[in-house]
Length: 330
Ligand code: NAD
Ligand code: UDP
Image (tube, rainbow, N blue to C red):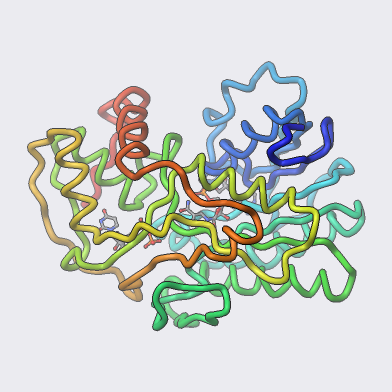
């Protein structure tokens, strides 16, 4: 493997959720480092198209399965990345029972497979574990402010339970685990109908459709470009010493939704008008990662400026997504 990550050349890696937005970029990085990869995915929100460029890659295998059910025989691997879970609010709320079980049953099954293999395990957690945060910016020691019964709970509490399972496997079975708390990530291969703000705004701007701003647009997020995030995941997995607890991965540049919309409108030169829609229930007001831990433990910090990442993402949507496929949320 490449010196940067120091992982074993030819090592076999299982990526659950590998056909998704982040997972497919992770697989690209793992293959370019010399790994053999098995992708396990149900294709619920992921797409074969995300891996189509790897159709002739002999070091990639694809297993179609849902992690909430009994898993088919899986190969013996040295590393497991668990990214299987819908990440966009409209998608994870469409089938909340399945979302919760994906995090709980799915993580438990994948942890068990890692235990049997003696593999290192990385859980893709989320900034949503902080809920609507009362501490700002969010550092890993903050326990969060999650509504356990609201419409976002299937995702937030599912991910919190997955973190618990992961650290209990470390305590009970000595498993080598890593937990990445991922903050809003964007880039090519997001779905046009993903429903998240970056893909919605770009697709609406490109199509000349109205831009949907939920609430007054003063809520903030911090957007990380996908290559930076994948670099963080690879470093976290490759680190020889097991980190003592979760690690935030995200870009600390915070902005309001209104500022993001302005920027995309300027960059696309779009004539789109802005329309207001109701703020979704439990929508977090502010979010910005404290990445001090990732900097210290992994020597990691994002390198791609928002304007640069948006330019690549806008170009990708303009090229890859036919106008009829572009999102037109009501
Ligand atoms: P995505 O929806 O594009 O990818 C998720 C993948 O998991 C898809 O390929 C989907 O088909 C698969 N999947 C879902 N449920 C499954 C199941 N039950 N069995 C098997 N496969 C299943 O989302 P993404 O943005 O690539 O997110 C990847 C991971 O990162 C998720 O775990 C998500 O919670 C986490 N994350 C993402 C973000 C972000 O901003 N994108 C932020 C925080 C955390
Ligand atoms: N949002 C918006 N318009 C959209 C989609 C989302 O204003 O078309 C808002 C949403 O209410 C939230 C922010 O943008 O405040 C980020 O939403 P997203 O779904 O991208 O991520 P998450 O809420 O999971 O952080």
